[in-house]
Structures are given as structure tokens and as C-alpha cells.
Image (tube, rainbow, N blue to C red; front, side, top):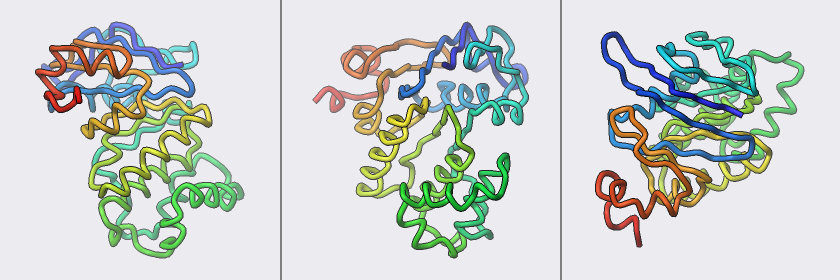
Length: 237
């Protein structure tokens, strides 16, 4: 289980996260919701060890998670799939995927690749194609497939449906649900409200780094402050 307790973090003189409390358990999907600048991506970057913790604590599987040590966090089984995909455009789909399993022996790659291709048949068809020639949605699939090559126990997704068409979005929701069924913990940021409401077990809403709501989707959906600030009236229908 991942647990953040009274976590503070930021950049330079700016404190972005202010006493944030958060838990994500195995097999659970927790979504972070909030306007731009609310601290959502900073939360993921802090957990990933990219942004140092200034106060409070982060524990993972009942042990302290080192602050500011991204390599240690990754080896502990926590993987961030960042916004913007960040694939290697001049490497093939296959080479991009293999790069995600660098912590493991190369002998493991063939079996793991087949597992990823079962999730993403389209990537199997385009295994020899350069990553930079894929569409935005296809690159997102590749980025998530690359993350799964590292066999994470906690997968953090920053806007996984970005750049996807409606059909790709449906397939992404199905994929995330299948990943959860395998016992992975998933922490995600997503502006597509139908996606958030359909797959999340819990939602945490941030406003300028402060938690203003937390709970099951229905509870958050009907919170007047959240509706006014982020969801809009259409989210209640």
C-alpha cells in the first residue's frame, strides 16, 4: 500500500502540495482531480522521487519511501507514465517496449512482450514501426506498454486518455480495469470525467495543493463545491 501523510512538496520558493494525505491499495484505482495548477502532476512526481518531499512522509509497503531518489522508487515497483508520453521517437515499437524492462534480464523480454502485445494488439502489428510515426493515441498505448514491461506494483498514469479517439478511450478504460484485476495499484490523473467516474474506486480533489474532497465517485460527483469548481452540472447527469 502507498500512503502519503501530511506531505508537502514544491519547486524553489513555491510550495505546491500542502499537507496532502493519500492512500492507494493493491487492486485499487485512485484518481486525482483538480484544475490546472492544483498539484496533481506534482503529487505523482513527488511519489516518483523526482520532486523531493519537504515535509510529512511517504510509505510504500509499510516502509519509508526515499525522497528525491527516482531510481530507488522505480526499483521498488513504482512506475510513472508521465503526461506527454515521452517515448523514443527514433526507436521502433519493440525497442521502446524493451527499454521499459531494463531492470530485468533480457531473457525475460520475449514472454513479457507477448503479454504486452496481448493487451495492445495494435502494437504487435506495428512492432517494427518507429515510435515517432504512431498517432498520439498509439504513442500513449506504447508509453503504458513500456511502463508495464517494468512489472510495476503501483502504476501512476498522468492523463492516459490524452490524444485518444473515443474507441481508443474505451479500450484504455478496459485495459486499466484489466490491470487492476491483476492486483496492481493505480493512481491516475485524467480530465476525461466519464473515464474517472467509471473506473475509480476513490477520487481525491485538489485545489492549490490542498485536498478539498475525497471519497467514492458518487460522493465526489455530488459535492457542490466540486461540481462548481471542476465538474460542471453535466457531471451530475
